[in-house]
Image (cartoon, rainbow, N blue to C red; front, side, top):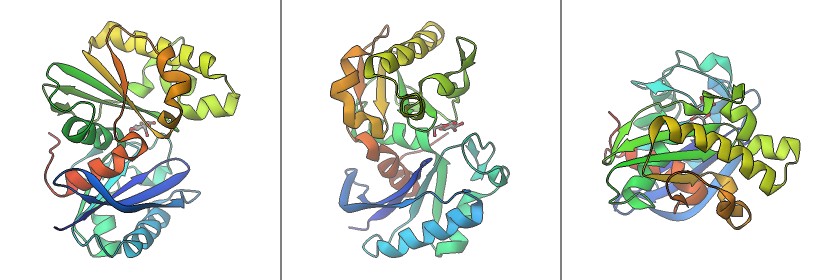
Length: 250
Ligand code: BGC
């Protein structure tokens, strides 16, 4: 069994875990480092190289889930990372820093691909919207299991503001919102998404799902809402699986 390494860059931490891509199982510990500030390409490449060195058991490809639009291995936006990433080929950067082949993709797409293959979306037909609630709001849209890559619905305007500026997990902590006040904000966002897209299922991922008991039952939309089965590790698992060529992104 060759293990791939999945890496997921968030606003506060960068995480890495060895994944058996046959079944999406994490093998051993997920290790983390603080996200470099500023998170420039060079600083992130050094952190990725250190994480790769910490996981000698993962000898396969490296998957890197990144919080921006990514097309053909190149980051195109930088809402919550250093602007030096715009136009940067993240796959080549990681390959240069680690000597490993790298698959580079949007973080919500990575989480969504993992959930659709191994988690809450497995076998679900129809349309599924996966949301990652973290520093921003990431979204991944699937229809009959196929991804619409780089859906940036976290930037859709809700009540005069970008959705992620009203209802991300970061906003909850920054404004010290109660679970119920924050869930009400997330519901406003879900309402806008539902009126535009009518998904059959919502899957919520991100570190905040550790607190699902506090807010999960307060969430309401026109379709069922479930937590990601891979919880905060969906991005790591999806990145590794994508890099190994087992899931594809159109
Ligand atoms: C970015 C997305 C990303 C999301 C979650 C947004 O600000 O534009 O590309 O998926 O944050 O990290």
